[in-house]
Amino acid sequence: MATALSRALKLPGKKGSELGEYDPLTQMDSEDDSEEDDLVLNYPRNGLASHSHSHAATLRLGQEEAELQEEDEDEEDAWRRGGGKDRRGETGGAADEGVGLVSEGAGQKAKVRAAVRTAAFVVPLICAAMFVLLFAFLLPCQQRRKEWETEVGHIGGVISPPMALWDVDGDGVEDLLIAAMRINNSSQQISFLGNSKEYSVVALHGVNGSVIWNRSLKEPLSSVQCSAPNTCLLITLTHLSSVNASTGKKLWEVPAGEVVSQAVAVPDLQGDSVPDLLIATLSPDQESALSLALHSGLTGSLIGQLVNLNLTSQGKLIGPMLHETAVGAYYILFGLGSVDAMSLRDVYKQATGRTTVPSSLSVKDPVWEKQRKNNSLIHIYSSVDHVEYFLPLVAGVCNNHNNLDTESSRNSSRSDWVSVCVNSQISVIRERDIHITWTINSSSMHSRPAIGHFNDDGVPDLLIQQSANGVRKVQIIDGAQGQNLWEAEFVCPHLVLEGSTILTTSGQSVFLFWAGDPLPASKNVTKVSPPEPVLRRLFLLHPAYPTILQELTSTTDTALTATVSYDDEQKDVSYVVVVSRPVSGPGPGAQLVKSASTSSSGACPSDASEKLQDTEQVQDVHTDTYLFTLIYLFR
Image 1 (cartoon, helix red, strand yellow):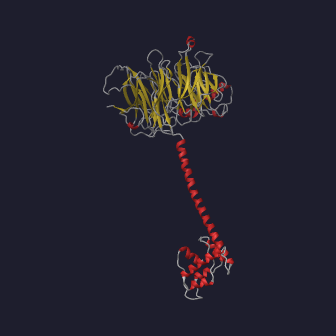
Image 2 (image 1 turned 60 degrees about the horizontal axis):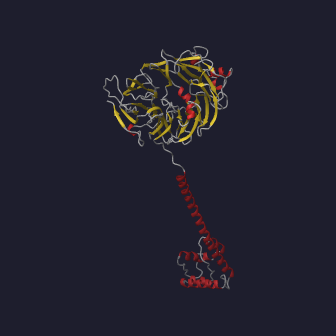
Image 3 (image 1 turned 30 degrees about the vertical axis):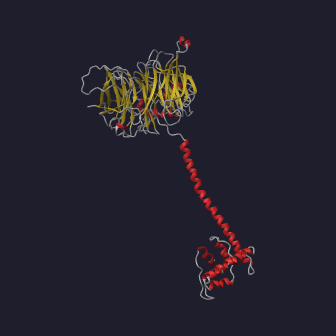
């Protein structure tokens, strides 16, 4: 064994001084062959024959070179005799030959193990690289919204087409559903019958404005509202229909009388786990009498019968709106020039004739019940002049999203209210006791106020717009006390379009509104004649920079309606506006939809948890779109 180690390590053999002296190398060589076989596996060698006593004597005399030479000769003789046999011990030669074969087999096993270890390392590495490359090339990149413009039919008079925002294709980007109308001049027969208008609802892709689907309608579309899981409710003059939001395929359609409102989602009344619907209609029995109707959210069928409302006042229809009080009682707010309320449990009882109600309607609010002026109606607000607008004092409610779900209705109703009368008297009404907090007078308001946070008192503020004598006056009113926080005057752009707000993480909002050229601060202007053609400008105001206005875009087209779209995944805000554009020559003008991405970090405030990252510098809000960065300073 020691000789084998010396030879493997290229070391000289150890010499002994005399016979009989203890030599550890010789002692180790004389050990049992089985022990040598166990150890030799770790030190592979070619076959070595066993040595005779004379060889051992030669080792003791220290004849190293002779020993090596003699061993080589013995090995050659052993191989020539066939397997290393000699006269002194055939068994020993055979054993050494076996050791050589075992050593050679062990070497092969070592090579196999090394190859397996290499493969075990390399193969997963290659698979991981291929996996990464596969996903990098095959998976689509996240779609980023950009500027786009799409024509969707003709303009049949200057009206605001119904529209809603909803992710119809599941890509995480809000798409646009909008009413469209085309005048068909190619068919003389249709023109002769006086029915040359073709009505439809179109779903446009939020990224590039391409048409996802287009569904024809028999009547003009009055309202489109979408809800989970993925359905949209279409309301025409006399029908309700539900369609699949992804394909536009009709799910159900029912007649509904003369519908005069949007639908309100109410808690499940039939136990089918689907929120039901409430709409306002004109009663067929009494001319111009208002009725409330309950419809199944699952099938659209009428629940019970119409509930007639004995309203004596006249004016613009308010609501209906769903309100949930602090104790969990549900009320429907509505009115004609004034605002009243009716318990949803009473609506259900009168519609179905039942005395028992679902568990969701079992709660009564004692504060509200004290306001009853007769058996069913609860008075909320009235004035000498008719109420023109009635909306919740909630910052960041996406007014044009038209989401049809009970949760958003509850969130928007758990608040105070803003009431605007015909003579532009603005009041804020406390929800907890239905008392007026403050009232101010303002003249010539032409659109709903936009609600947002201008200061940091936690109470939403109001963006209002007034127009008179060719001057557009824009003000921001403190929602807590009714004081004027900011104002500026512009050339009136001849357009009626409400403003928009976007809530930021700082708790403040940015305000967007349309106007003409700013007027100088020092002025005594009694009447302003706008230039021709009229240039309409979209401005952005950040409360952190109250003396700076940023112009986002300008156009000579007439803006009809607008909304703000939010992409939560990419934190991207887009402003979507519908405009009418005249065409050269005879014929109707074109209705176009334009979308401009702000490419800023922001959120649609339909949910208070979704907020914009605050923009500390207004100049950096818009970075990679066609939006301009013209700054106007007010001194």
